[in-house]
Amino acid sequence: MLLLIAALSVGLFAAAPDARIELAVETVRVTAEKLLDRLPDEIPFVAPGSDAVLTGRVSHIRDGDTLEIGGVPVRFTDLDCPELGTSAGETAKQHLVWAARGRALSCRLTGEMSYDRHLGACTRDDGTRIRDAMRAKGICS
Image (cartoon, rainbow, N blue to C red):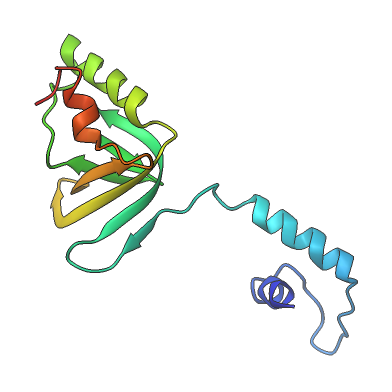
């Protein structure tokens, strides 16, 4: 019933003001499934507060010390990697791809921004800190 109300409110079903709307449950179910198929696989969640926590899957890796979770960019406060455009920077990005891509992360944000990026420290779903995984390779400090 809630999906029908939602579908009506966004105009998926149009009818004259005096018309009766009669839909079979199967029609509503199929329409609801189509709506759900259009949603992203995972929507990141940011807990409010000064120590906000962003959780979700990595959607993009920018460089060795910046990634995105559901399109939200996070620059690591506890990691410094060489810049892209250098051999070491490209290597650092590839190591971050290995360490984080497709993983669920939990990033504790500081509440500060650097350009368009939130600043924070991230931990993988297996408890490994991204900082530790990257520093173990000896490329980032």
